[in-house]
Amino acid sequence: MTETKPKLMIAVLLLASALILGAACTGLLSHPVNSQTGSQEDTVLPVMQGQFDSLVLDTNLPTSPEVIAVYKIRSIDLVKDGDETKAFSIKNSIPSATEAPALAEKALEKYGGLPEDAQLVDAVPRYLNKYNLTTESVEEQHPIGTQVRYIQILNELPVIGASINMNLGEEGEIIKIMKAWPEYEQTGEVDIIPADKAYEKLRNSETIDRYQGTLPKGTKITKITPGYKLYNPWKQDSEPYLKPVWIFYAVTTFDPESFPLMVDATA
Image 1 (spheres, rainbow, N blue to C red):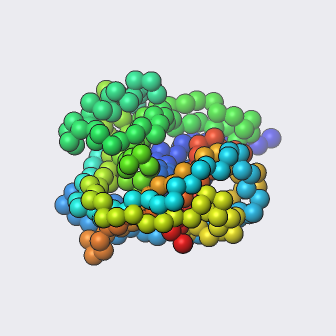
Image 2 (image 1 turned 90 degrees about the horizontal axis):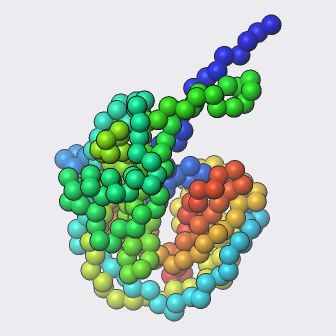
Image 3 (image 1 turned 90 degrees about the vertical axis):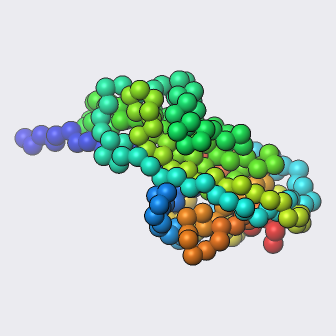
């Protein structure tokens, strides 16, 4: 008789980042980034394949504003710091989801503090799981860090791509952080399409970003809002810019963590 030994599986650490049925993110999309002294280009995720016409609308279409403010980016604060090995190492203990936001705010003083236009997305303890493939169950959990994420809010609207994504260690210290945080100057206003037309574009797969993977059947849209998408925050050879979008927050049947699907709000 052959015995199947338990194997280790690592829980997703960076949503962002990663994206989408785990990414985020963030942010929440997070991008490959440069250090404060170096540089590295963004990578463009290629379109999510899937049954966009089978999306379940689990919320009401919001009242649509006729116009949205447009901005140019005056400056952008970029930070990538931390120890990759330490970020994935097993800890004796990690902050709880309840205590992590206060610890994160304190730890961010090293990087200029928590911006006033930041909104907490979530605080999630992450574990290295010992998973038994025979019984299909988690036998042990080992803490590796607590992920805390913030998104930028501009004129009460979310900015996808402008975020702080960090992992906290045993004492609430930052063991890894990625931050892209612009400052803006309003340059005018632009007409935007109504929410129902934006939803029609979504169902026709007319998303502005193309994600790898498959959109599972039964995916629900749980929240809809106008907002912005930040482009090129890490590219030294391209100017960063902001694009008005309609954001559709989606939830799959196997993961309660939402992720954004976006369509151009101006055409």
